[in-house]
Amino acid sequence: MQPYQREFLELALANDVLRFGEFTLKSGRASPYFFNAGRFDRGAALAALGRAYAAAIEREGIAFDMLFGPAYKGIALAVVAAVALAGRGRDVPVAFNRKEAKDHGEGGVLIGAPLAGRVLIVDDVVTAGTSIRESVALIRAHGATPSGVLIALDRRERGAGTLSAAQEVEAELGLPVHAIAGLDELLALAGEKHELVQYRDRLSAYRARYGATPPA
Image (cartoon, rainbow, N blue to C red; front, side, top):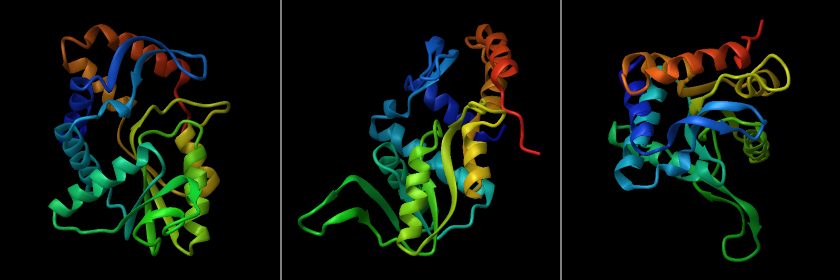
């Protein structure tokens, strides 16, 4: 596990973004953990989250020219990632969309820099992949090229088939999906921190039951 991944997971724990217990997911599955990026709701936490995104971008060697944040959670995430990248000496444009088109003022559905070049989509998680598909369509409609997706946490569990939601996006859209951290790193952290050891077996069992199979 990379230092930035550990820092990200500990940040999520400290801000109740990542919680352990018994949670019923939208899929109906009983999960031993829950992740809600909306709880990153203070300046210091958001600044640290931006640094985690920037570190993941550098570690993964993602090639892109600008960032795009899907409304609504992705807006703040793309912005804090752009600010963190600027702090590392890389000043990149950032844009995001509205859910509904504006018919006055500047109009349209886009805010920020014009979509151009290679666009990296920044979001919290991939659940059904709907916002990613909509973002890709919007980016392409404006003549730009989606270059990949960067999310905060990849649960790496399968959907209706054998692939995870992130893997389905990769297979369908031909885009790489990167994550700051995933279930493997979460399991590693649970094995190291005494207050989380009690959840390690449940996490392992959950992965064994629902873990996605890598595409052939």
